[in-house]
Image 1 (cartoon, one colour):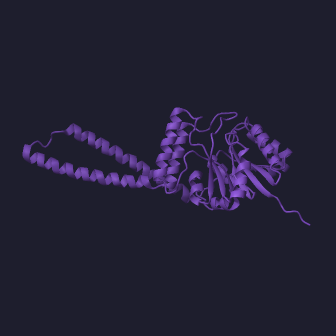
Image 2: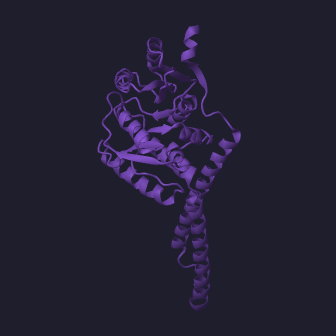
Image 3: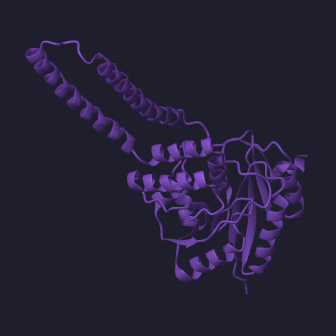
Length: 319
């Protein structure tokens, strides 16, 4: 009598300069895998052009543990490219996305798998809306960001949502069907839908290393989210354009009446100069917004690859 084949969970871990965190993460995730005896595991690490010893550690781990796989990029393509590569190459019935810095606790995998199996969810995801480990400025900006994106986005955004989640294969396939070059995964996860359970938790501090996200990078990421899942900035630019046209029309009437009554056609030129500079600034700002949308379209039309593979664990046989 044939034994029933075990289900498999793929753990996808994008890595960029994580040489300090990887040994700790590997130790903890293998401990969880050992406790979950009813399922098999594979650990798929994505080396996103790291400049430290991340790749060497991954090679060493893959040699001693056949469950460890890795994909090493030809350069840094960003976390979005890393997550897409992981999802595309994962072979499990369920796929989890995790960070190697231990801010995504491996023990949560047991809870997430239980909720999917026993409660019928397609996905279990974690959110950390309070952000106690952030600084005051970053907490404020993050709070403002979620309020803004929640109002203007065409898809709902959960405050404090993290990429850390466990998904069924059908949801992974739906995400992979969205092949846009400019990716904003939090929006994509929301766009594809499926029955998702959210678990609120407080993300711990990193076990080692420093965060790769500066304030500037976070601003850039925020703009990516707006451009990817909202056309509201274009609507706002059109509305403001109409408002300024009405203001200009009213101003012309006022100037004509003032000239006819008081005979002073040149009075108030400093305020007029300020208005011209202000309106010019607004025009340039919204031209920039339109330019950003066009740049995204330009990159999509080029159809460049989301990532380029330089090496995988299969190449170790040729070393």
